[in-house]
Every structure is written in structure tokens, then in C-alpha cells.
Image (cartoon, rainbow, N blue to C red; front, side):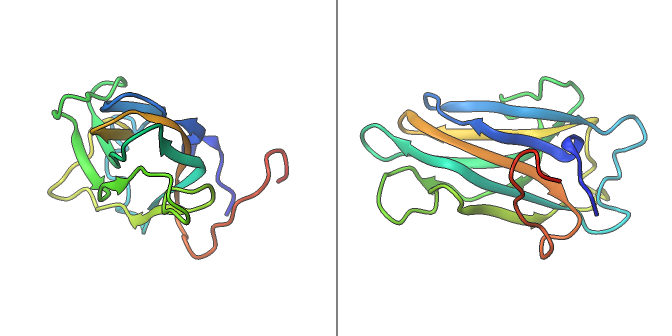
Amino acid sequence: MIMDSTAEFCDATSVAAAASVALVGNVMDLGADGRDIGNSGPLFLVITCSTDIITGGAAGTISFQLASDAQAAIAVDGTASEHIITRAFITDDATPNELDSGQLIVAQALPMAGLDAYERYLGILVTIATTTVTAGAINAFLTPDVAAWRAVADGIN
């Protein structure tokens, strides 16, 4: 299966920021009739590190959410619908680290719409706690087959 950029939220998108909640990367418009995402077969959210995620001083935490909202500027105040929430990862520069370049952060099946219906716009929220993330970037996308997914260098199809 060939996936295009419409299934991609982030491509080496920076997550460097002060402690906060932020919408990062692109937002997917599911359309008025597209809110049953995941009901036609398994669909997975994959997030990987493309650049080490670190802090300049004391360690903090960072977590990621797949969220939907009625507006394209997905709310960061807790009112957006959260569908996948990762655990909090420690943002220290220890080696090896779960947030090093090339590491898999999450590969999880999207919940079926059912009781937890998706709103029109779908995107990635990043929650940074305690301290500023000084460097780091992620890739985030949807895929129907995690086992067959592999990274391909830019410009090579």
C-alpha cells in the first residue's frame, strides 16, 4: 500500500518548546462523513523520533496525544477529544534514551469510533511538563499495517 502526505501529521517536525500543550504538524480533515475512521479496518498511529528530544537542564516529561476537535486549530485547553495518549517520557539526555533519533515512540491501533466518536479534525498534541525541551523532532502518521511499515528516504518512492 502506498501512503501519501495526507496520512502524515509530522515529518521531522520540531517539538522544542517551553512547558505547555501544543498542536504540532498537520491536521487531517476527516470531513462530515469521515468520522468513522478505523471502522473499515485497523489503522495505526505511529510516532517516531527523527531528532533526539532533549532538555537543556533538568529532565522533564513529554507525552503525545492523538486528538480530534470540531475546529482545525485543535484546542489545547483539554476540550479536544483524546483518542490515544502516550505515557510521559523522560526528556533527559541519557544514553541510550527512548527519545533518541530513530526510536519508536508509539505504534497503536486507533480506537473505533463507536462510543468515542471522532470530531472532524484530527491531529497530534504534545504535552511538555516541568521544563523546556530544547531540541527534538518527530514523525507522526497513520498506516494500515505497522508490520509492513518502514522508513524511506525523502524523494525515494
